[in-house]
Image 1: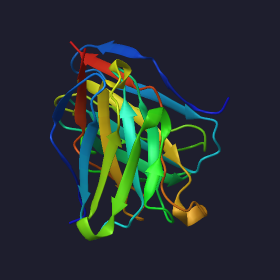
Image 2: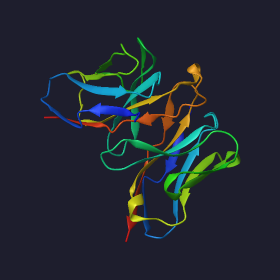
Image 3: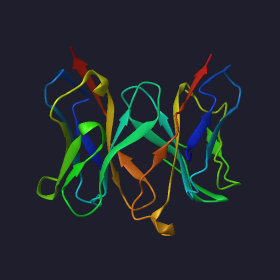
Image 4: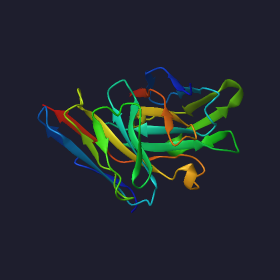
Amino acid sequence: AQSVTQLGSHVSVSEGALVLLRCNYSSSVPPYLFWYVQYPNQGLQLLLKYTTGATLVKGINGFEAEFKKSETSFHLTKPSAHMSDAAEYFCAGDNQGGKLIFGQGTELSVKP
Amino acid sequence: DGGITQSPKYLFRKEGQNVTLSCEQNLNHDAMYWYRQDPGQGLRLIYYSQIVNDFQKGDIAEGYSVSREKKESFPLTVTSAQKNPTAFYLCASSIPMVFGGPYNEQFFGPGTRLTVL
């Protein structure tokens, strides 16, 4: 079955530290991958997407992700966490069947 | 500005009552989706529609119904048959690949939080 897996439902970092949120996809999911962010009681906002071309993708708010086909991964990183980065993050893949397949989400906490 | 609107933001209903959640988009997208979000469970697809007058069940369609009479609108009715309707509901839209979209990038509305008392 096609799947997207996010490792770690909760991640906590200190302000200024590296943020690393992990996402792995099943090889049957086509390589159209997305990261969304959700702030409390709001909808999802697109952070970045990988479609074709360069495997290192830059998004909004200083986030980036690298598509690694050999590892079936699409981890999200940010060099220096800010308090405003505290939110829930979702990785998703396009199954080319009219639906996105979402991971379970990772809640990021940022400590002062 | 183009976007997706959901109303109301907060909705309260008594147990046993049907309730309809509104979703409107002016992005000229053909496809629309409804998701349910519960704490710790991510997003679960309820229904989706790739074209007017057509829709398909998602993973958790029981107790819900939809209609797609207009391209811009995709209302969701939570019926009394839904055993645990209290949740955060999200609507989204996209240009599906069948209509020339290169990939299924979905745009989300702000959500409606439904509480059944």
